[in-house]
Length: 234
Image 1 (cartoon, helix red, strand yellow):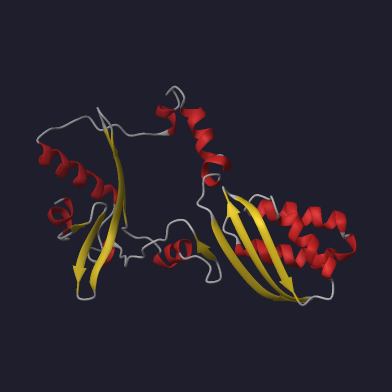
Image 2 (cartoon, rainbow, N blue to C red):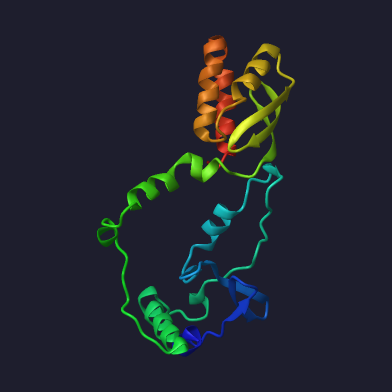
């Protein structure tokens, strides 16, 4: 209602979480949300695409083409659009009051709007502790779904075909196949990766470990690690 009244945009609900607009090319999503209900309160989080750089959005949401054979969840891709494509004058400072007005009109009630800022949140008990927990590696990646990943590349010293198993955010099993003339190097690369955190820092740790065993292969190890780091998104 807020969009139609203030900007002439006719949006529709799609499923439980999305808002869409219909045009000649079909349904296009402009909002997604998540919510949780408890006994005495409800939490609702939503996003609205107004003037997002969609090329970057695609980049952030699209995995590397060589990337994962997942045992977790797969994402369903949706066609998206910015609301400014329909209403060029739409802005955050105009949209938010329109949503508030529509919300109050729908429920027949008003309430004082509380703007959350770092300053007025600082006094909340337990907030800093919760923040530290949520930004930790254990919370962000330690419960990631298990998955398998295959990566292939031609490096200056040979072809490599790498198979990784990740469990709980760590590399649990590795196989490396190569036509390299240095079979010992391939074995050291494999054992160095096992047990490392699935991240760029984990790759750095594996490279450091491999260099301790085979310092004479610093060039090959460095090239392998640099390539592998590029394939990881965390």
